[in-house]
Length: 271
Length: 302
Image (cartoon, rainbow over all chains, first blue to last red; front, side, top):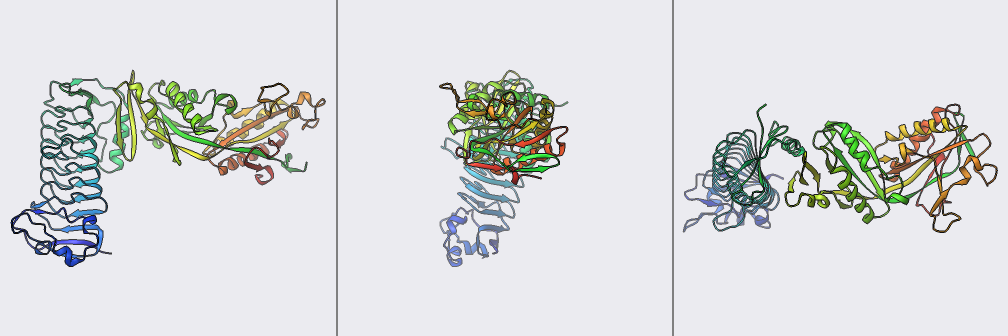
């Protein structure tokens, strides 16, 4: 069975809400019905057929051939199956998804993986701000699953992370792990200002000493802990990183002592 | 009793009677094999028989760094008990007193079973609020701060209800050196069978028992039929040339594991021959009424 494929016909003239195009929401619909689904966001919204040429029948494997930054909410609410996007996407990709996998070959805009519950998101390019974070008014951000960014993440990555793992391959902006509740953020590459700002619990892992750390983080030595090699091996086994992130005896900071202070920043030391 | 002969060694046409048990397995790792082994030996100390120890436990195999979850040397430990509650109690106490306390140790589940037993879930409170929960790769771990760093422990391990305990072999020899030689060879061969442990000291028991005694309240007492000093005065199972008997008791992950272990043990003792080892190989049973699993020696010959 060929993957259900949405091939772009032309650049849409408005932002699109692609959340209806997930396996569970498309189940039972004919191709004609799918083509009539409204995905536009203006007062005269466009339909699927206006933007895409739809082919294939396998609902559990959805492919977007060609995409633009105007594709918002791709894979939002995904519960099972896989969605692959050939290019860039807009905001809130994979928001609140609770299973399955979402692969984005290009970059994603703000709030990628927002409030994600479970499943796996892989973004080959960069992401905007608030990776995995909550929307305004929500109390928690990502609460489970695995969110991988191969490129760079902008500011506030992992805002209010509750559970799950965020892995970033090429560095992050400021305020990574902002208001983190728990969970794990693993970051290789350059680190922006004040990571872990106001984090309560959870772990932020770096492959280098973070600069511009908040003064409310206190050094906790270089303990020999088995967790670092266990997690390094997990990252390499899942092909998230291609070399150990932390190495043996990582350095540790405890914080943020402006709040609960049970979080940690672990980082690879220079030998 | 009909007897079979292999390489000059007599094999009784009898069977070992074994019981269904509950079992679990964990991997204990440490910075060096020495300390992994130390934690494992301490944890499996005083665990020879469920009669008096609550469980039967021993090291199954030693694992090189490449085969453990955290890339450090380790030991796979198996623990057997008659019931789930007792197994959980023994596991928790032994883990808390012997593994948590051992320098640099970490502990991982190593058995997929029908139910789960608490590992780190039972010990995390030692962290007094500073314990850290981590879930990744489909597994849940607890990190408990301790004086040399952290005790890393998987939250749960699996429980198997397919385990079998009480597989055994009796080595009857002309003297105690030869009996011990036969038993040691069997132990070395069985140690190579994955999933089988021999919980007694060095794998060997010298005080084989029967059920009950002439004294009230004594659950088990000496098996006089196999005691050479009583050969003349009781209804003995020993012939005049036998002066020492040693037993190897085997617990296995499955019925097949025990059979494989017994087969390996018999083969090792037979290849040793009667001049250096056992003149006769037998097995212990209770007439076949108590245990569900019967291992007939004639089916296990090389």
